[in-house]
Length: 432
Ligand SMILES: *Cc1c(COP(=O)(O)O)cnc(C)c1O
Image (cartoon, rainbow, N blue to C red):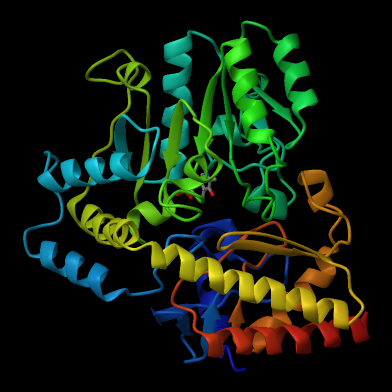
């Protein structure tokens, strides 16, 4: 596969863009080589600058559940473009998307639209602190909640991939207010709540983790976290930036039947344009300006073009159970197929999957938390990643990421992915 144009573009990019990329996870730093510069995409496929085709298993890190360049989304965006892009004044589309989100997410009574998942989580903890008049938050090791200062403590995703889970530039005062515990360990959570009694505003977590690779909550874990929050008078924030509108129309909270006080959303909510949202109980959300004393604002929040894309995406997901089911079916076929091939090759690697999210960990340890995930052989992952890429399958360029399967993948694509998997796995095992 010839990727010369990407290579040249990356060399050029590094002269003006830090590291050549506008988000570190794109840099291929942990897998080596140069990133692939994309030119277009349709349905299940990405096309790069050298005209190579890839089956996409990241889907823009989550947003493209419907597949790329969905016709109805394109039409909706085109329809609003001629009416101008931004007014800095309210529009009916914002009312429509707010009502639509409320009708889908079971525990959102009031909400605010923002421009990214980072903004959503940053605002959610500010509101939680304002409401409870407490300072500390608890997050889980390896969970990623965007790049706001408070969350860059034991952060997963790119921070874990780059080996900088605790970012420089975050003041020690800020870091002191973020407590961390291992995921899937109620005992550790209870202990830290007791030690910090009366000081914790909120617990924030990914109800299904995508950012240390895909990690599922153990049976009863989310219910246990909810119970501890009630017992210790702490707010529960579900960060459903990845899981919202994907694991179920109402996200992980609908799937597991657990009720958070606040929810953060992103990714699918914008259908590929920059959108986030946070919302929850009316009494808590009423703290936000102009109703209350917690300040949060945004020049481009609720942008009409972004709302059109989000609306056209969410409307389809709400209207048809078949979308999520097809994506789930695709992921199941891929993950189960990989399991069968692995065992044929005598390999016992852990594959975690739920719905249309999955990760193949290069470890034979079950993966329930970040420590387990870190037992993976990342060198082997890097070799596998490049073999898959050569065979036209585009994975996340890091072991510590979930893959996101779209509904656009068809049976022939699954066949292609599994053949690529078998060839790649055999090859890297021989070399190893
Ligand atoms: C991606 C992600 C974020 C951050 O969203 P951005 O839009 O990248 O700022 C926050 N939380 C979770 C769980 C995410 O996966």
